[in-house]
Amino acid sequence: MASTHEDEYLELASYRKCVERIQANWHVFVERRTQRLGQALFDAPVEKIAENILEDLFTGVLDWQLSDVNLQIGRADLILSDLGIKRLVLETKRPGALAWNRQSVHSALEQARRYAAVQKVETIAVSDGSILYAADVHDGGLRDRVLVSLASIEPQLDLWWLSAHGIYRTRPQPVGGTISNFDGIGATVTPQPGFATLLHPKYRLPAQCFAFIDDASRPTTWKLPYRLGDGAIDVKRLPKAIQAILSNYRGARVTIPREAAGDVLVQLARAAASLGKMPCQTNPAADAYVEAHQALDQLDRLSEVGCCAPVASK
Image (cartoon, rainbow, N blue to C red; front, side, top):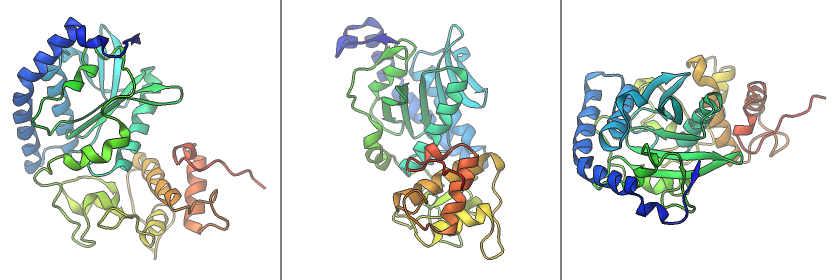
C-alpha cells in the first residue's frame, strides 16, 4: 500500500474531489437508504438489502464504478476491485445485526478475514447497512481504517479511505474511528422499523440476545438465547445453548444451518471465555464448555476464542 504521512492526504486533489462528492451526494444516499430499509417490511431478503445499500454507497457517494462492485465472489459478499485488482473484501449482515453488539462485529470480521486470505486481499470490512467498519490486515492483526455510521445525517468524510483513490493508501495512526469505540457509534445508530423493537414471543428478548438469527425481522427464527435483556451473559442459558447444538438439552436439539454452526460456537465460546469458564481457564470445566472446546479444536477455530489452545491427548 502507498504510504500517507500525517495530514499530507488533505492536500491531494483526489481527496478534495472525493470530499466534495460525499458532501454533494450524502443526503440522496440517506434518503435512498431509508427506502431500501423499507423493503424489509415486504419480505425482501434483508441481507440483500444491506448489500444494495453498500452498492449505493460505493457507486453513488464514492467514486467506484458499478463494474468495480462485485457480489458473491469466492463466498465473499462484496469485493471492490480496480482494473481487476481486488482492493476490499466486505462481509454484509442483516440491517441492525452489527449495531447491536461488538461480538457480532468480531464474528463477521473473522469471516471477512478468511475470505480475504483466500482472495489475497489486505483490506476487509463489515457492514449491516447501518454501520461500516474497515481495517487492514497487518502483522497478524487488524489496523483500523474506517468506522462510520451510515445512518448519520452528516456526511461521513472518513469514507475517503474506502474510495478508489484512498483504498490503496496506508492511513496514519491513530485514527478517529476505531474498533475500540465501536459500542459508542453502534449506540448512536437510529433503530430501524421492524428490527430494534422486536422481541422473541417466548423469551421476550431482543435479537442481540440470541446466538443465531436467521431473519432479523422474524423473531421466531432467533435461536439459542444466551444473553440477558441488558446485554450481560446469561450464565444459566449459555451452557444450555452450547448443549442444544452439540448434543441436546432435555431431549431437544436445536437445528441451525451447517455453515453457521462454527460461527455460533465461536460466539458462545467467547462468551464462556469472558466468564473464565473454558477448560483452558478452569479445571474441571463444565461438560458443555469441554464439548465446545473439543468441537472448535476439531474445526481448527480455537484461536478465534482468544484464550484457548488445543489440549494434548493423554
